[in-house]
Image 1 (spheres, rainbow, N blue to C red):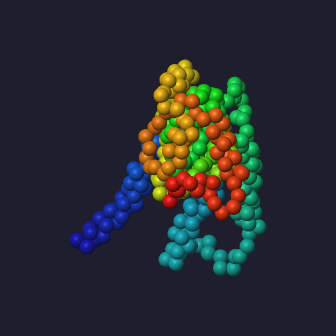
Image 2 (cartoon, rainbow, N blue to C red; image 1 turned 90 degrees about the vertical axis):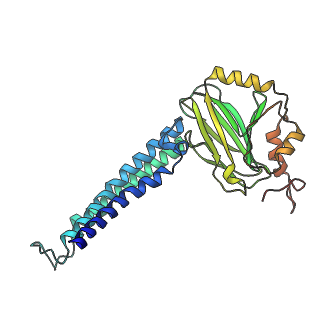
Image 3 (cartoon, helix red, strand yellow; image 1 turned 90 degrees about the horizontal axis):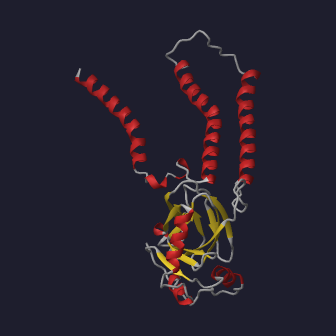
Length: 305
């Protein structure tokens, strides 16, 4: 009796463990890194819908396969005597049409949806249905921090991004003195890569006021894991007040200040600059576009590792 009770207890404990293990894994998730599962931007909402539409279509095939796999194992086990045993049966055109036809139809539907949404959400294009002039933000990935330049407002920040709710923002993204990086604010939308000497563009719109995590999702050296920034989505009036306050800063983004930012540092606190060097973003691009030979354009700077 004790052995039977122990066996039953072991089975119950095993089943409970199978149920509890996924919950333990989910418990380690950062509530701010839910991404498109909690969208706060127009593009993220579209990605959220596309993800679950795709998932639902795939489950049309996956769920029946799982159910049939379990059913067949039970129904046709050697100890289970059945009357519909047909040892000479080998083919059915009806069943062949089902398990080939339905997946093919789903693949065609998925391909059509994906192709359409890929072009609709092209990060280089303006977002359809959004009126008004986009706010331009120039983002430069540095070792290991993000520099954001607001050319129209005449300010710049490090590891801090503030944008108005409801207004389209056009990001120009590149890197300097650091390998290829990737700009990503999960709750607002698309991740996009950036390389030296190239200008990547991304259009996003935030539709909910809040503070969201931004990050680099491409490994680019020792400080990669600390290359995060806060994205503050605020009302337009509050955005204007913030811009006016930063303009009063005594810290200007001069050439000397920018050279300091080129030095590798990790977990930098937000910094705010007034009067950034004119055309700094384009100057960074041209530094790499006009370079040639074996020497790195920032050869005189302390390098990332």
